[in-house]
Image (cartoon, rainbow, N blue to C red; front, side, top):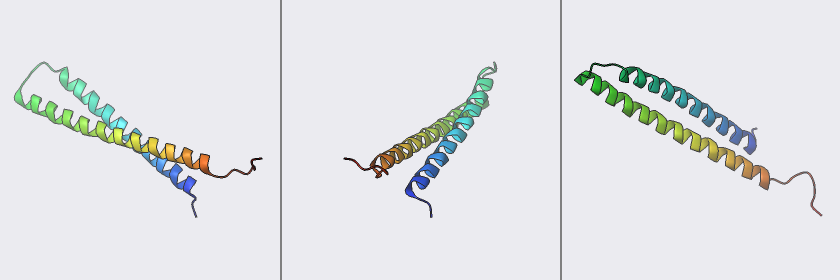
Length: 92
């Protein structure tokens, strides 16, 4: 059976992986935006695609931010649990 520490570690690892995945997606989206913005022809379709990509990139960055917050909270909870857990040594 997994202990609380193991569970918290697993949650922190999962959140960190999600944050990393979201950051990679955001980087890909940013690269697409840069490529699109380098184009010289401004037409309606291009503006619409750019708007949709910016909205998508914003959602990805929001998700990455939430995942980072969850990872931070999990790490903080883990640290607090480690501090409050009784150690092997007795205090005098």
